[in-house]
Length: 230
Image (cartoon, rainbow, N blue to C red; front, side, top):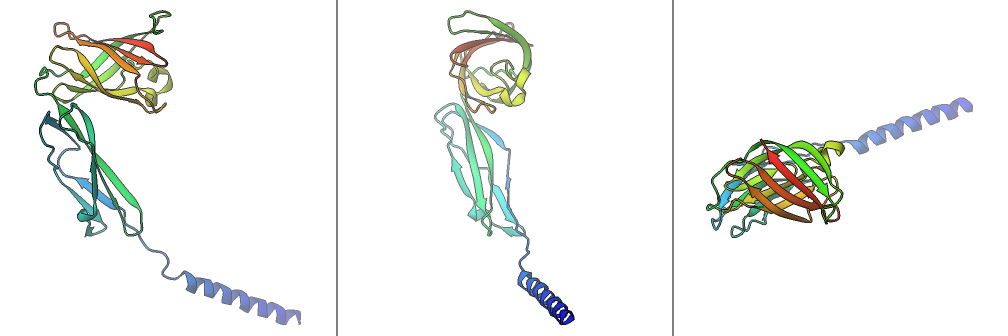
């Protein structure tokens, strides 16, 4: 009787496994994410008042061209100097999304035609809002020209925090050089804390010496006075 029970159990197990195999047939398949390839540059610059012209893109889902299904969103304001994003997104047939973006810089053609790109030694003095309790620190930053009079700075605090906490705590940002050789802040952001500057004051460019200076207000109105020299 025990042997009959064992044989019956064996057949039951085999039948269950065969049933599972049949149930799982044709379940596995490949899904292709939409690959969005931008035509032209990933960062473009246009003059103040000039209309943005889309350079184009191609979107492929496997071997199928699905460019017409791409959704484009943009915050470009061609009447305001700044750095903007044009975003491209698409969803594949299985509901998985893909996206990419193009940076658009709106610059002032009347701004000084000077390239401030390069590595700068920074001398930063952090004080309270009333100028008391000075805490100096020296480091270096990188500045990159992205359009006439518009520059990307890899740390507007002169690497004050990033030197200790790492690159995620660099206050990245964009600044614009005005006709009178003063600087204005366009945007700022620190990834590590998810915020930006509270204010940006007294930005100046000395055309004779090449020295840059600005005061970044952050961390509860503390002043980070940065002097930048090559």
